[in-house]
Image (cartoon, rainbow, N blue to C red; front, side, top):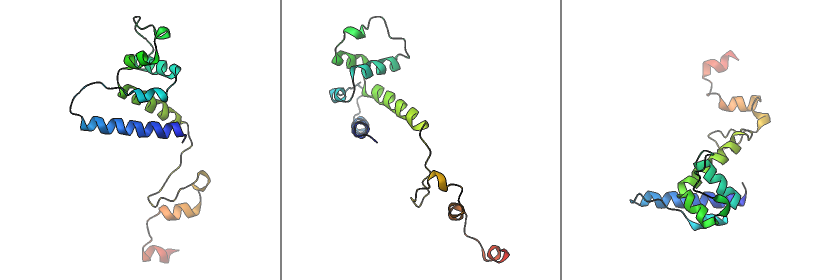
Length: 131
C-alpha cells in the first residue's frame, strides 16, 4: 500500500478515535487533510457528496481550497469518499485467502492437495483404516 494511503488511514483512525471520545455532535474538518488531496480531488469529494448535482450557489472554480473544505463540511464526508474509492479498488484486486494459521494461500495453491488436506478436519481411526 502506498505511503499516502497509510498516512490517510492513520489520520482517519485518529479522526474516528477523537469523534468517539467527543460527546458533542458538531461537524469537524481537519485542515491537515489539505496536504493529502489535490484541488481536483476536493472537487471530486464535493461531487460525491452531492451525487453529481452540485448546488448552483457553489462556484467551485473560483473557490480556494479552504473554501472547498468548508463546502465538504465534515471529515466523515472525506472518509466516506476515500473508503468508497478504496473499496472499488479492492473489489478489482485478486483475492488472497489467509487461513486461521496465517499461512497465505497463493492463487495457484488453492486447488492443490496440500491445501485441501490442511482445510479438512482430522480423520478418525475408522476413516484412516478405509484408506
